[in-house]
Image 1 (cartoon, one colour):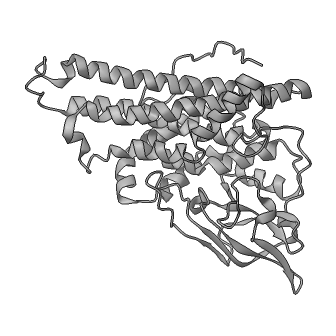
Image 2 (cartoon, helix red, strand yellow; image 1 turned 30 degrees about the vertical axis):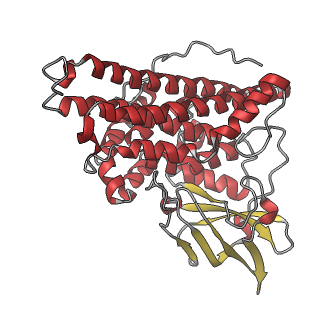
Image 3 (cartoon, rainbow, N blue to C red; image 1 turned 180 degrees about the vertical axis):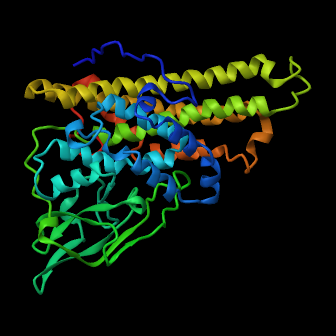
Length: 412
């Protein structure tokens, strides 16, 4: 299926600094501007923004997708990704840290609202954040290696005890609740949801990536943590939907879109901050230099392309979520998976180029560590490395040539 999209109500991406109409309508613009201030310093100094995340909680950031009648804002997926891009342009680490929460909410809204799942959605409406504890270094493959989890839930003296270690637990430093995947002692899969401050939980800030340094993505360890019977999530009904992981992938790509918008803003600032031009320049000031205009125009065009690709993919994914006919839904899910993959490839390549061109606008002075302008490239490169584009391109090409479908598992 080819993606036939309606003309968006806001076809042009917002400016590199000013938040878009959805963010303004939700009353988040001022807070996002506050988050933007100091983002570079926080990244350089490893200053974990607990206070800012708390302000986002109080502003209802976690309930954006909840229906209004459930205490949320009821915004569409397209609108959610617009807000995420705005937040990412202010601070991509904070935006990225929220991914698992939004992923949990998206999944929970598609399932029966019962038991602990329903209570977590109620907590979300009250401003709490729910994050996930999934990956383990011991699993042979990334994705759905559920049976290979060493994290276990055991019954001892009438109590359920959780033990195990998860690495790269994105956002867990900021979590109110943790959703943990593991196995019963019998090997059968189990998922539990527990308060993040419960005795026996150790959340360690040991993520050492070159970028996205403040996402709270360190290890989470569980030392015989007590789990109540009513904190065991009901087994999910077998889903008829494929490519549900497109949401998680598009979320990361949306954060990259926000980064490229910041590159536009910082390139303009770098030029305006310079007091002299090169001796072989053709203008008295760099702001009047034609080659500088060309470079910033190129970066701006890259930003437009990335933002447009993300929004187009979000529209198809939103249509898939809203579709009620099973056949139409399946067709749209496949279309979304392909479009999300294309958007990722576009964003990864153009973000890398934009991050490089930023240094063409200001010369050697832009490389000063005090400016920390390399963070944009580092952050985008780190995000894109979650799922290398070469893997995406292999399936995109196979689909075009032979109609081979991408795998209906994680990352698609």
